[in-house]
Length: 363
Image (cartoon, rainbow, N blue to C red):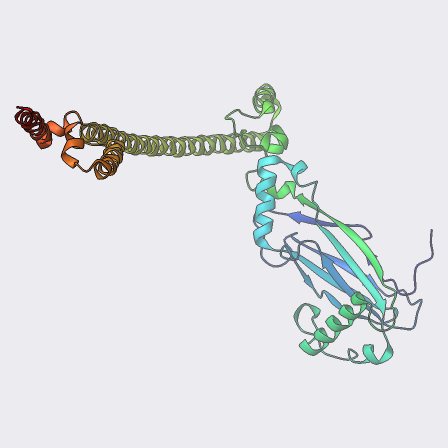
């Protein structure tokens, strides 16, 4: 075994803190939800040792004092109280799942200790302490600053001793039996579990109840009363579970109905939008058809190409008329255009006049 370190406090208990839980605490501080831890200065050094107690669940446990100074060859008693709210939660867990559910607690405590100078420890000498062994505010702040400096490594490096302790929660069987919880006699801790979420009862519930019925002849009246109370409590738990299942079923049904209504409303809105979109598309198609009819009706008139051809023909006719000297003769020779403008008649009269005049000249 390794020799103890001079700056290490001797911690009692050595590795496990046990909290005994009762259903109805007396409220005088001796109800089992409190445990004590003793820190002893071994005297291997003449320096005073500072300590600090930490926990992984600072809201669950009330530690007094959680830090302080221990002089050589003296002891410090640390009181650790399990707060009532968490005590009720743990006891409820025990009633539902048994002691095995409490045996896997992950709560831990850490006790740190280190040597301090004579000047620093002198501030705490002969100083009055308040309730729970707490120092006054100025000294608490000085201790907190010292530990912060040690944690950050500022200044001289001070060796720190760390001691870890695990936590175990147990329920007082005598207190449970006195409160009508003597089901440990017949049902056992495992039978304390509530039915599963699927609606089935624990597998050992029916079996242990049958075994209890066969052994009732050997029970004393007090044991029979405890057994009846246990069965009644189990019945109440089953009834409460059935009520919870019914309530959850109603909630799920209401949610389902609401979802159906929302779905129907959404489908109706979507159909209305689709129907409205179909009408807009039909009118667009009809509008497109009307546009094509209009273009067809316009096609019956003079198109741009025909107009261009006409302009070209007229241009060349004007050029020819200029060269020949007779616009009427040129236009009269154009089919349809000469008749339309009356140049063909003037052309015939001109021909008659020409041939007639020649005959007279010849005669």
